[in-house]
Amino acid sequence: MHYNGWVFGHEVDRLMDSLTHPFGYSQPEVMIPMEIISDESVELPMWRSGWALVHPDPSVPIWSPDEQDFLTITWPTAVLRDLLGPCALLGKGHTESAGVARKHVVEIDGQWYAAVPRFFHTVGDHWSRIIASDRPALVTISGQEVATTTVADMDLDASFKVGGPSLIVGPEGPVYHDISWGFGDKEDSIARRRAVTEVLMTLPGDTPVTAIDFHT
Amino acid sequence: MGFYRAWLFGEQAIDHMDAMTAPDGYPRAEVWLPLDVVGTLDDGLKQWRSAWVQCPPENGQVWIEFGLPTPLITEYLGPRALISDFGMGHGKALRSNVRKREGTWMVKVPRFFETVTKFWTTEPQDDALLSTTNGQKTAATTVGTLDVEVSRDRFRNEPELIVGPDGPMVFGPLDYRYRSTLDWEKRLDAALHSLLQMPSTTPVTTAWCRF
Image (cartoon, rainbow over all chains, first blue to last red; front, side, top):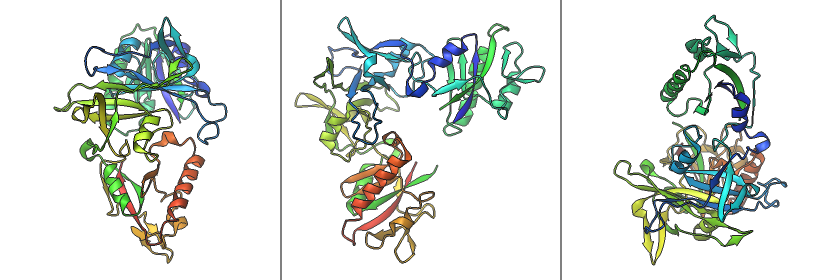
């Protein structure tokens, strides 16, 4: 599926590359400790991370022949939020899991680390600045439909009307991501999208705004 | 809110459906599994280690979210456990279902680890019924009179869940198990092929499960 996104700021390529996983492989960018625990002195610690190492068996049909060894790793969501910051793409649950290739798990000074994408999850397998002609992107205050504009020239209400984005990325990373197509609370989603965009519209007037297409 | 369809083979499947239901989000906890497990070394790294978080109280209830290695889940629950092929199964239990038993922290989980619905019924919720060999449409029949090819109209009537006497055999919404439509079709074919070997009087019932 193809979706619209808006990126505010100059780092479009860098941010969008961090948010995609071409050919199924995301960029490992941040090292996260794998073996963490809240407090070992109590009987049942409040939290601890865990993992399972998987050796895909090529004789089992679900695995492709070139499948590499990987780990499924589970961390407490709050710990990931502290480590990766407010733009990390984390769910509402208290645990969050990711698959990490075995080669991206390393031991440094006796501590195991896993390299994960900068925002923990990615949003799709590729992205592009090319927007299909039947899917308008951004509208300027002069009423033109364009693929790039600036904060000062963007007509926010008109832009929302012609092509509500499923992804909004600010200078620090994604601030809105919803591809649920109305499943869940649509009103809440639209309100959240407007709230985060209004914050980004306070950036300097010459901040670029770029429409992108991403594919899942 | 829609329904998906399950085909239940045999009387025991009805009981399994209750074991896979979580009314109001509360699944029936039936089997104790160790919560705190660590595997042996594999290439310098421990094969697995379980994870958990004690969640903040919510509506007066304290839940624990946890992740357990799939080999351990299969060892305790058997091959019908609803778990992913990606090494870990994730669940959620009330704090009251986590206890220290004989020195080991244990968590009580549903019979097949995951649940599949909050509500199910055998009252038809749409016209996707089973077909019999004499051309009738019905919500329930037997193995001997089920016309499986007609019943299984791929584009509008294929079941998402098949439950046999030992438990669930295929479950579509757990879609990370199925890398392709072909893989799903193969699993469905294999499950139906084995269930159709059951005695011809074995009941086959359609259940409608709420998404």
